[in-house]
Image 1 (spheres, rainbow, N blue to C red):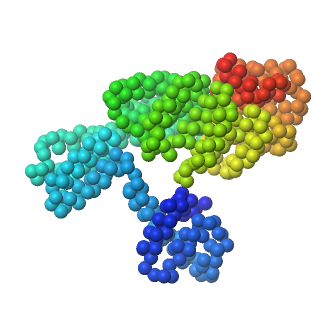
Image 2 (cartoon, rainbow, N blue to C red; image 1 turned 60 degrees about the horizontal axis):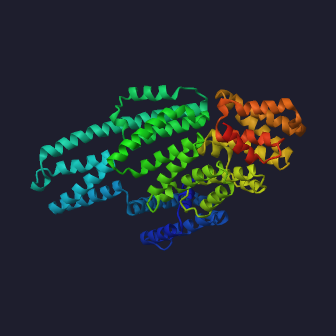
Image 3 (spheres, rainbow, N blue to C red; image 1 turned 90 degrees about the horizontal axis):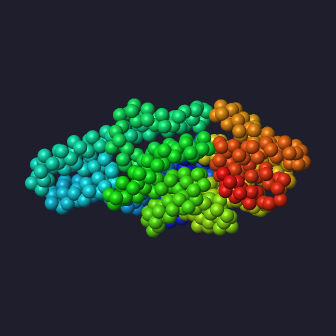
Amino acid sequence: MDSLNELVKILDDTDFKQFKQYLQSRNKRDDVKNLELLNLLKTDDIDSLNRLYNCDKNKDAYHALRKRLQENLLIFLSNKTFETSHSESQNALRLLVVARYLLENDLVKLAFRCLKKAEVMAERAEQFNLLNEILLLKLQYAHLPQAGNFDLITARFTQNQLCMQSEANLNVAYAYLRQQLHFINQEGRIVNLTSLVIATIRKYKISVADLMTYKSVYQILFIANEYAAIQQNYQLIERFVNRVNRFIELRSAENKSHTYYQIQVLYYLANFHLRQKNFMRSMGYLNEMMAIMQGGKYNQVFFMQHQLLYALNKFFTGSADDAIDVLQAALTGKSNNAKLEDMEDLRICIAMFMALNDNRKSLKHLSMLNQTDAWYEKKMGMLWSIRKHLMEVLIYAQFSNFELAASRLQSFRRRYKSYLLKTSEQRVLNYLKLVERYLVNPNVIDDERYKRSVHEMANAEQNNDIFTLSFIGWLIARWEKSSTYEIVLNLIKIK
Protein backbone atom coordinates (compact mmCIF):
# COMPACT_ATOMS: atom_id res chain seq x y z
CA MET A 1 0.00 0.00 0.00
CA ASP A 2 1.35 3.43 -0.94
CA SER A 3 1.61 6.40 1.40
CA LEU A 4 -1.56 8.15 0.18
CA ASN A 5 -3.68 5.03 0.71
CA GLU A 6 -2.17 4.59 4.18
CA LEU A 7 -2.99 8.20 5.07
CA VAL A 8 -6.60 7.82 3.93
CA LYS A 9 -6.97 4.58 5.94
CA ILE A 10 -6.18 6.33 9.23
CA LEU A 11 -9.09 8.76 8.82
CA ASP A 12 -12.21 7.87 10.79
CA ASP A 13 -15.65 8.87 9.45
CA THR A 14 -15.61 12.26 11.19
CA ASP A 15 -12.09 13.05 9.96
CA PHE A 16 -13.06 11.98 6.44
CA LYS A 17 -16.07 14.33 6.35
CA GLN A 18 -14.00 17.19 7.76
CA PHE A 19 -11.26 16.62 5.19
CA LYS A 20 -13.82 16.68 2.36
CA GLN A 21 -15.10 20.02 3.69
CA TYR A 22 -11.52 21.25 3.86
CA LEU A 23 -10.94 20.31 0.21
CA GLN A 24 -14.21 21.91 -0.88
CA SER A 25 -13.22 25.16 0.81
CA ARG A 26 -9.89 25.17 -1.06
CA ASN A 27 -11.19 24.16 -4.50
CA LYS A 28 -11.43 27.22 -6.77
CA ARG A 29 -12.68 25.34 -9.87
CA ASP A 30 -15.54 22.93 -10.45
CA ASP A 31 -13.50 20.45 -12.49
CA VAL A 32 -11.01 19.55 -9.74
CA LYS A 33 -11.01 15.77 -9.25
CA ASN A 34 -9.51 15.58 -5.74
CA LEU A 35 -12.87 14.79 -4.07
CA GLU A 36 -13.59 12.07 -6.60
CA LEU A 37 -10.15 10.54 -6.05
CA LEU A 38 -10.59 10.70 -2.27
CA ASN A 39 -13.90 8.81 -2.42
CA LEU A 40 -12.41 6.15 -4.68
CA LEU A 41 -9.45 5.64 -2.33
CA LYS A 42 -11.81 5.31 0.62
CA THR A 43 -13.79 2.54 -1.11
CA ASP A 44 -10.78 0.77 -2.69
CA ASP A 45 -12.51 0.98 -6.09
CA ILE A 46 -9.55 0.02 -8.30
CA ASP A 47 -11.53 -0.12 -11.57
CA SER A 48 -12.91 3.38 -11.12
CA LEU A 49 -9.47 4.63 -10.15
CA ASN A 50 -8.14 3.36 -13.48
CA ARG A 51 -10.92 5.23 -15.30
CA LEU A 52 -10.37 8.50 -13.45
CA TYR A 53 -8.03 9.51 -16.27
CA ASN A 54 -8.88 7.49 -19.36
CA CYS A 55 -5.77 7.74 -21.50
CA ASP A 56 -2.18 6.74 -20.87
CA LYS A 57 -1.13 10.28 -21.73
CA ASN A 58 -2.95 11.47 -18.61
CA LYS A 59 -0.78 9.43 -16.21
CA ASP A 60 1.20 12.55 -15.32
CA ALA A 61 -2.00 14.42 -14.51
CA TYR A 62 -3.17 11.51 -12.32
CA HIS A 63 0.09 11.41 -10.34
CA ALA A 64 0.03 15.20 -9.95
CA LEU A 65 -3.51 14.91 -8.56
CA ARG A 66 -2.41 12.25 -6.07
CA LYS A 67 0.54 14.38 -5.00
CA ARG A 68 -1.65 17.44 -4.39
CA LEU A 69 -4.20 15.36 -2.49
CA GLN A 70 -1.48 13.91 -0.26
CA GLU A 71 -0.04 17.37 0.46
CA ASN A 72 -3.50 18.70 1.37
CA LEU A 73 -4.14 15.70 3.61
CA LEU A 74 -0.83 16.22 5.45
CA ILE A 75 -1.67 19.90 6.03
CA PHE A 76 -5.16 18.95 7.25
CA LEU A 77 -3.77 16.34 9.67
CA SER A 78 -1.13 18.71 11.03
CA ASN A 79 -3.76 21.40 11.66
CA LYS A 80 -6.12 18.90 13.26
CA THR A 81 -3.39 17.45 15.47
CA PHE A 82 -2.47 20.90 16.69
CA GLU A 83 -6.11 21.79 17.35
CA THR A 84 -7.08 18.59 19.17
CA SER A 85 -3.92 17.88 21.15
CA HIS A 86 -4.10 19.08 24.73
CA SER A 87 -0.75 17.92 26.07
CA GLU A 88 1.20 20.38 28.16
CA SER A 89 3.84 20.78 25.47
CA GLN A 90 1.18 21.58 22.85
CA ASN A 91 -0.55 24.01 25.20
CA ALA A 92 2.79 25.68 25.88
CA LEU A 93 3.43 25.91 22.14
CA ARG A 94 0.03 27.55 21.62
CA LEU A 95 0.79 30.11 24.32
CA LEU A 96 4.19 30.81 22.73
CA VAL A 97 2.57 31.45 19.32
CA VAL A 98 -0.06 33.72 20.91
CA ALA A 99 2.56 35.59 22.96
CA ARG A 100 4.66 36.27 19.86
CA TYR A 101 1.59 37.64 18.08
CA LEU A 102 0.70 39.83 21.07
CA LEU A 103 4.23 41.22 21.32
CA GLU A 104 4.21 42.07 17.64
CA ASN A 105 1.01 44.02 18.27
CA ASP A 106 2.29 45.82 21.41
CA LEU A 107 0.07 43.94 23.89
CA VAL A 108 3.09 43.44 26.11
CA LYS A 109 1.59 42.76 29.54
CA LEU A 110 -0.73 40.02 28.30
CA ALA A 111 2.05 38.56 26.14
CA PHE A 112 4.43 38.09 29.07
CA ARG A 113 1.62 36.57 31.10
CA CYS A 114 1.23 33.95 28.33
CA LEU A 115 4.99 33.39 28.23
CA LYS A 116 5.10 32.81 31.98
CA LYS A 117 2.42 30.10 31.74
CA ALA A 118 4.13 28.55 28.73
CA GLU A 119 7.48 28.47 30.54
CA VAL A 120 5.99 26.63 33.53
CA MET A 121 4.28 24.07 31.26
CA ALA A 122 7.36 23.45 29.11
CA GLU A 123 9.58 23.00 32.15
CA ARG A 124 7.12 20.63 33.80
CA ALA A 125 6.92 18.55 30.62
CA GLU A 126 10.74 18.55 30.30
CA GLN A 127 10.42 20.06 26.80
CA PHE A 128 13.80 21.79 26.76
CA ASN A 129 13.74 22.73 23.06
CA LEU A 130 10.38 24.43 23.48
CA LEU A 131 11.57 26.13 26.66
CA ASN A 132 14.55 27.40 24.68
CA GLU A 133 12.20 29.10 22.17
CA ILE A 134 10.20 30.68 25.02
CA LEU A 135 13.32 32.05 26.71
CA LEU A 136 14.70 33.32 23.39
CA LEU A 137 11.49 35.30 22.87
CA LYS A 138 11.76 36.71 26.38
CA LEU A 139 15.36 37.74 25.66
CA GLN A 140 14.30 39.33 22.38
CA TYR A 141 11.96 41.63 24.31
CA ALA A 142 14.08 41.88 27.48
CA HIS A 143 14.42 45.64 26.96
CA LEU A 144 10.76 46.08 27.88
CA PRO A 145 9.94 46.81 31.56
CA GLN A 146 7.46 43.90 31.74
CA ALA A 147 10.14 41.36 30.79
CA GLY A 148 11.55 41.02 34.30
CA ASN A 149 15.11 40.67 35.53
CA PHE A 150 17.56 40.29 32.63
CA ASP A 151 20.16 38.37 34.65
CA LEU A 152 17.56 35.84 35.78
CA ILE A 153 16.36 35.29 32.20
CA THR A 154 19.93 34.78 30.90
CA ALA A 155 20.72 32.42 33.80
CA ARG A 156 17.61 30.37 32.99
CA PHE A 157 18.56 30.38 29.31
CA THR A 158 22.11 29.17 30.05
CA GLN A 159 20.86 26.43 32.38
CA ASN A 160 18.34 25.28 29.79
CA GLN A 161 21.09 25.11 27.16
CA LEU A 162 22.85 22.57 29.38
CA CYS A 163 19.63 20.59 29.73
CA MET A 164 19.19 20.63 25.95
CA GLN A 165 22.70 19.30 25.45
CA SER A 166 22.15 16.57 28.04
CA GLU A 167 18.92 15.53 26.34
CA ALA A 168 20.66 15.51 22.97
CA ASN A 169 23.36 13.21 24.38
CA LEU A 170 20.68 10.92 25.79
CA ASN A 171 18.87 10.77 22.46
CA VAL A 172 22.08 9.92 20.60
CA ALA A 173 22.89 7.21 23.17
CA TYR A 174 19.36 5.81 22.88
CA ALA A 175 19.63 5.76 19.08
CA TYR A 176 22.98 3.95 19.35
CA LEU A 177 21.54 1.34 21.74
CA ARG A 178 18.57 0.75 19.45
CA GLN A 179 20.97 0.26 16.54
CA GLN A 180 22.90 -2.32 18.57
CA LEU A 181 19.61 -3.97 19.51
CA HIS A 182 18.81 -4.27 15.81
CA PHE A 183 22.15 -6.00 15.23
CA ILE A 184 21.47 -8.37 18.14
CA ASN A 185 18.03 -9.25 16.77
CA GLN A 186 18.63 -9.31 13.01
CA GLU A 187 22.28 -10.36 12.76
CA GLY A 188 22.60 -12.68 15.72
CA ARG A 189 25.12 -10.65 17.71
CA ILE A 190 25.63 -11.73 21.29
CA VAL A 191 26.45 -9.00 23.83
CA ASN A 192 26.35 -8.34 27.54
CA LEU A 193 23.58 -5.75 27.90
CA THR A 194 24.85 -4.24 31.15
CA SER A 195 28.33 -3.75 29.70
CA LEU A 196 26.83 -2.27 26.51
CA VAL A 197 24.68 0.24 28.43
CA ILE A 198 27.55 1.30 30.72
CA ALA A 199 29.94 1.68 27.76
CA THR A 200 27.33 3.77 25.90
CA ILE A 201 26.74 6.03 28.91
CA ARG A 202 30.48 6.65 29.18
CA LYS A 203 30.92 7.13 25.44
CA TYR A 204 28.33 9.91 25.28
CA LYS A 205 29.30 11.43 28.66
CA ILE A 206 25.91 10.95 30.31
CA SER A 207 25.75 11.74 34.02
CA VAL A 208 23.65 9.99 36.68
CA ALA A 209 21.51 13.13 36.94
CA ASP A 210 20.73 12.92 33.21
CA LEU A 211 19.32 9.43 33.75
CA MET A 212 16.91 10.54 36.47
CA THR A 213 13.96 11.42 34.24
CA TYR A 214 10.97 9.29 33.21
CA LYS A 215 11.96 9.66 29.56
CA SER A 216 15.50 8.37 30.04
CA VAL A 217 14.30 5.55 32.32
CA TYR A 218 11.72 4.57 29.69
CA GLN A 219 14.38 4.55 26.97
CA ILE A 220 16.73 2.29 28.91
CA LEU A 221 13.87 0.05 30.05
CA PHE A 222 12.70 -0.26 26.43
CA ILE A 223 16.15 -1.46 25.37
CA ALA A 224 16.36 -3.86 28.31
CA ASN A 225 12.88 -5.28 27.64
CA GLU A 226 13.63 -5.85 23.94
CA TYR A 227 16.94 -7.52 24.81
CA ALA A 228 15.24 -9.85 27.32
CA ALA A 229 12.57 -10.74 24.75
CA ILE A 230 15.21 -11.64 22.17
CA GLN A 231 17.07 -13.80 24.70
CA GLN A 232 13.75 -15.12 26.13
CA ASN A 233 15.22 -14.61 29.58
CA TYR A 234 13.86 -11.73 31.65
CA GLN A 235 16.14 -12.60 34.55
CA LEU A 236 18.89 -10.85 32.56
CA ILE A 237 17.34 -7.41 33.15
CA GLU A 238 16.35 -7.75 36.82
CA ARG A 239 19.13 -5.34 37.80
CA PHE A 240 17.65 -2.64 35.55
CA VAL A 241 14.14 -3.25 36.88
CA ASN A 242 15.26 -2.92 40.50
CA ARG A 243 16.85 0.44 39.69
CA VAL A 244 13.67 1.59 37.98
CA ASN A 245 11.66 0.66 41.06
CA ARG A 246 13.94 2.84 43.21
CA PHE A 247 13.61 5.68 40.69
CA ILE A 248 9.79 5.50 40.81
CA GLU A 249 9.82 5.60 44.61
CA LEU A 250 11.95 8.76 44.52
CA ARG A 251 9.84 10.49 41.86
CA SER A 252 6.57 9.55 43.58
CA ALA A 253 7.74 11.43 46.64
CA GLU A 254 8.24 14.54 44.46
CA ASN A 255 4.60 14.28 43.28
CA LYS A 256 5.46 15.30 39.70
CA SER A 257 3.42 14.27 36.67
CA HIS A 258 5.13 12.85 33.56
CA THR A 259 2.14 10.92 32.25
CA TYR A 260 3.24 9.56 28.86
CA TYR A 261 6.60 8.11 29.88
CA GLN A 262 5.23 7.14 33.29
CA ILE A 263 2.63 4.90 31.57
CA GLN A 264 5.35 3.41 29.35
CA VAL A 265 7.54 2.60 32.35
CA LEU A 266 4.64 0.96 34.21
CA TYR A 267 3.85 -1.11 31.10
CA TYR A 268 7.38 -2.49 30.90
CA LEU A 269 7.45 -3.24 34.61
CA ALA A 270 4.13 -5.11 34.31
CA ASN A 271 5.51 -7.08 31.37
CA PHE A 272 8.72 -7.93 33.22
CA HIS A 273 6.86 -9.34 36.23
CA LEU A 274 4.44 -11.23 33.96
CA ARG A 275 7.36 -12.95 32.25
CA GLN A 276 8.90 -13.69 35.65
CA LYS A 277 5.58 -15.32 36.66
CA ASN A 278 5.05 -12.74 39.40
CA PHE A 279 1.45 -12.21 38.32
CA MET A 280 0.26 -10.33 41.39
CA ARG A 281 2.94 -7.69 41.05
CA SER A 282 2.33 -7.44 37.31
CA MET A 283 -1.37 -6.79 37.93
CA GLY A 284 -0.43 -4.14 40.48
CA TYR A 285 1.52 -2.19 37.86
CA LEU A 286 -1.33 -2.64 35.37
CA ASN A 287 -3.76 -1.17 37.92
CA GLU A 288 -1.46 1.83 38.36
CA MET A 289 -1.23 2.16 34.60
CA MET A 290 -5.02 2.10 34.17
CA ALA A 291 -5.53 4.63 36.97
CA ILE A 292 -3.37 7.11 35.06
CA MET A 293 -4.88 6.27 31.65
CA GLN A 294 -8.56 6.22 32.56
CA GLY A 295 -10.51 9.13 31.16
CA GLY A 296 -7.32 10.75 29.87
CA LYS A 297 -5.93 11.43 26.44
CA TYR A 298 -3.59 8.42 26.60
CA ASN A 299 -6.34 5.86 27.16
CA GLN A 300 -6.73 5.08 23.44
CA VAL A 301 -2.97 5.07 22.89
CA PHE A 302 -2.19 2.41 25.49
CA PHE A 303 -5.53 0.63 26.02
CA MET A 304 -4.89 -2.39 23.77
CA GLN A 305 -1.37 -2.92 25.15
CA HIS A 306 -2.78 -2.77 28.67
CA GLN A 307 -5.55 -5.26 27.83
CA LEU A 308 -3.03 -7.65 26.28
CA LEU A 309 -0.96 -7.87 29.49
CA TYR A 310 -4.12 -7.96 31.61
CA ALA A 311 -5.46 -10.92 29.60
CA LEU A 312 -2.11 -12.76 29.75
CA ASN A 313 -2.07 -12.40 33.54
CA LYS A 314 -5.64 -13.73 33.66
CA PHE A 315 -4.82 -16.63 31.38
CA PHE A 316 -1.70 -17.81 33.18
CA THR A 317 -3.46 -17.65 36.57
CA GLY A 318 -6.25 -19.99 35.45
CA SER A 319 -8.95 -17.68 34.07
CA ALA A 320 -8.81 -18.60 30.38
CA ASP A 321 -12.41 -17.67 29.54
CA ASP A 322 -12.04 -14.26 31.16
CA ALA A 323 -8.79 -13.69 29.27
CA ILE A 324 -10.44 -14.47 25.92
CA ASP A 325 -13.39 -12.20 26.75
CA VAL A 326 -11.02 -9.34 27.59
CA LEU A 327 -9.20 -9.60 24.25
CA GLN A 328 -12.34 -10.02 22.16
CA ALA A 329 -13.93 -7.00 23.84
CA ALA A 330 -10.78 -4.95 23.19
CA LEU A 331 -10.87 -5.87 19.48
CA THR A 332 -14.61 -5.24 19.17
CA GLY A 333 -14.38 -1.84 20.83
CA LYS A 334 -11.15 -0.75 19.16
CA SER A 335 -10.83 2.83 17.99
CA ASN A 336 -10.41 3.72 14.32
CA ASN A 337 -6.86 4.79 15.09
CA ALA A 338 -5.90 1.47 16.69
CA LYS A 339 -2.50 0.23 15.51
CA LEU A 340 -2.53 -2.90 13.38
CA GLU A 341 0.46 -4.21 15.37
CA ASP A 342 -1.58 -4.03 18.60
CA MET A 343 -4.51 -5.82 16.96
CA GLU A 344 -2.26 -8.60 15.65
CA ASP A 345 -0.87 -9.07 19.17
CA LEU A 346 -4.38 -9.58 20.51
CA ARG A 347 -5.39 -11.91 17.68
CA ILE A 348 -2.43 -14.23 18.09
CA CYS A 349 -3.07 -14.43 21.83
CA ILE A 350 -6.72 -15.37 21.28
CA ALA A 351 -5.58 -18.10 18.87
CA MET A 352 -3.07 -19.35 21.46
CA PHE A 353 -5.56 -19.26 24.35
CA MET A 354 -8.14 -21.24 22.35
CA ALA A 355 -5.63 -23.76 21.04
CA LEU A 356 -4.33 -24.54 24.52
CA ASN A 357 -7.96 -25.23 25.49
CA ASP A 358 -8.54 -27.50 22.45
CA ASN A 359 -10.99 -25.05 20.88
CA ARG A 360 -11.18 -25.39 17.09
CA LYS A 361 -12.07 -21.70 16.79
CA SER A 362 -8.35 -21.07 17.18
CA LEU A 363 -8.02 -22.01 13.48
CA LYS A 364 -10.34 -19.15 12.53
CA HIS A 365 -8.36 -16.64 14.59
CA LEU A 366 -5.09 -17.98 13.20
CA SER A 367 -6.37 -17.34 9.66
CA MET A 368 -6.90 -13.66 10.57
CA LEU A 369 -3.12 -13.25 10.87
CA ASN A 370 -2.81 -12.73 7.14
CA GLN A 371 0.00 -10.20 6.71
CA THR A 372 3.14 -11.28 4.86
CA ASP A 373 6.08 -12.90 6.66
CA ALA A 374 8.22 -9.89 5.77
CA TRP A 375 5.63 -7.54 7.32
CA TYR A 376 5.54 -9.51 10.57
CA GLU A 377 9.32 -9.67 10.76
CA LYS A 378 9.64 -5.91 10.20
CA LYS A 379 6.71 -4.70 12.32
CA MET A 380 6.46 -7.35 15.04
CA GLY A 381 10.03 -8.64 15.18
CA MET A 382 11.75 -11.92 14.36
CA LEU A 383 10.84 -13.58 17.67
CA TRP A 384 7.14 -12.80 17.19
CA SER A 385 7.25 -14.20 13.64
CA ILE A 386 9.01 -17.36 14.79
CA ARG A 387 6.38 -17.98 17.47
CA LYS A 388 3.59 -17.41 14.96
CA HIS A 389 5.05 -20.01 12.57
CA LEU A 390 5.53 -22.53 15.37
CA MET A 391 1.95 -21.97 16.53
CA GLU A 392 0.68 -22.68 13.03
CA VAL A 393 2.52 -26.00 12.97
CA LEU A 394 1.16 -27.04 16.37
CA ILE A 395 -2.44 -25.91 15.83
CA TYR A 396 -2.72 -27.64 12.43
CA ALA A 397 -1.30 -30.83 13.96
CA GLN A 398 -3.56 -30.53 17.01
CA PHE A 399 -6.65 -30.62 14.81
CA SER A 400 -5.32 -33.52 12.68
CA ASN A 401 -4.14 -31.63 9.62
CA PHE A 402 -0.72 -33.31 9.71
CA GLU A 403 0.07 -32.68 6.05
CA LEU A 404 -0.38 -28.91 6.37
CA ALA A 405 1.50 -28.93 9.69
CA ALA A 406 4.46 -30.74 8.06
CA SER A 407 4.41 -28.26 5.18
CA ARG A 408 4.49 -25.29 7.58
CA LEU A 409 7.31 -26.94 9.53
CA GLN A 410 9.45 -27.25 6.41
CA SER A 411 8.67 -23.66 5.48
CA PHE A 412 9.69 -22.57 8.98
CA ARG A 413 12.99 -24.42 8.75
CA ARG A 414 13.83 -22.90 5.36
CA ARG A 415 13.07 -19.36 6.51
CA TYR A 416 14.49 -19.31 10.03
CA LYS A 417 17.09 -22.07 10.45
CA SER A 418 20.08 -19.90 9.53
CA TYR A 419 18.82 -17.05 11.73
CA LEU A 420 18.34 -19.37 14.71
CA LEU A 421 21.81 -20.83 14.28
CA LYS A 422 23.33 -17.34 14.06
CA THR A 423 21.56 -16.28 17.26
CA SER A 424 22.61 -19.46 19.10
CA GLU A 425 18.98 -20.60 19.40
CA GLN A 426 19.67 -24.28 18.89
CA ARG A 427 16.98 -25.08 21.49
CA VAL A 428 14.27 -23.93 19.04
CA LEU A 429 15.64 -26.27 16.39
CA ASN A 430 15.80 -29.08 18.96
CA TYR A 431 12.16 -28.44 19.81
CA LEU A 432 11.33 -28.48 16.10
CA LYS A 433 12.93 -31.93 15.77
CA LEU A 434 10.70 -33.26 18.55
CA VAL A 435 7.63 -31.84 16.83
CA GLU A 436 8.70 -33.30 13.50
CA ARG A 437 9.16 -36.76 15.03
CA TYR A 438 5.59 -36.56 16.29
CA LEU A 439 4.25 -35.44 12.90
CA VAL A 440 6.04 -38.29 11.09
CA ASN A 441 4.99 -40.89 13.66
CA PRO A 442 2.31 -39.85 16.22
CA ASN A 443 2.93 -43.10 18.13
CA VAL A 444 6.34 -41.77 19.20
CA ILE A 445 4.56 -40.20 22.20
CA ASP A 446 4.52 -43.69 23.76
CA ASP A 447 8.32 -43.92 23.59
CA GLU A 448 9.83 -43.31 27.06
CA ARG A 449 13.03 -41.83 25.57
CA TYR A 450 10.92 -39.32 23.65
CA LYS A 451 9.03 -38.36 26.82
CA ARG A 452 12.32 -38.01 28.70
CA SER A 453 13.68 -35.64 26.02
CA VAL A 454 10.59 -33.42 26.30
CA HIS A 455 10.72 -33.37 30.11
CA GLU A 456 14.43 -32.49 30.05
CA MET A 457 13.59 -29.58 27.81
CA ALA A 458 10.82 -28.45 30.20
CA ASN A 459 13.19 -28.62 33.19
CA ALA A 460 16.04 -26.70 31.52
CA GLU A 461 16.75 -23.37 33.25
CA GLN A 462 16.82 -21.42 29.99
CA ASN A 463 13.26 -22.58 29.17
CA ASN A 464 11.68 -20.83 32.14
CA ASP A 465 9.65 -18.35 30.05
CA ILE A 466 5.83 -18.69 30.10
CA PHE A 467 5.58 -18.81 26.30
CA THR A 468 8.37 -21.37 25.98
CA LEU A 469 6.64 -23.54 28.60
CA SER A 470 3.41 -23.25 26.61
CA PHE A 471 5.08 -24.73 23.54
CA ILE A 472 6.66 -27.55 25.55
CA GLY A 473 3.36 -28.18 27.36
CA TRP A 474 1.73 -28.82 23.98
CA LEU A 475 4.08 -31.79 23.40
CA ILE A 476 3.49 -33.21 26.89
CA ALA A 477 -0.26 -33.00 26.29
CA ARG A 478 0.09 -35.44 23.38
CA TRP A 479 0.48 -38.32 25.85
CA GLU A 480 -1.19 -36.92 28.97
CA LYS A 481 -4.95 -37.11 29.43
CA SER A 482 -5.35 -33.54 30.74
CA SER A 483 -5.61 -30.50 28.47
CA THR A 484 -2.59 -28.55 27.28
CA TYR A 485 -3.79 -25.59 29.34
CA GLU A 486 -3.79 -27.60 32.59
CA ILE A 487 -0.31 -28.91 31.84
CA VAL A 488 1.02 -25.41 31.12
CA LEU A 489 -0.43 -24.10 34.40
CA ASN A 490 1.26 -26.97 36.26
CA LEU A 491 4.60 -26.30 34.52
CA ILE A 492 4.41 -22.64 35.54
CA LYS A 493 3.73 -23.58 39.18
CA ILE A 494 6.63 -26.03 39.23
CA LYS A 495 9.09 -23.61 37.60
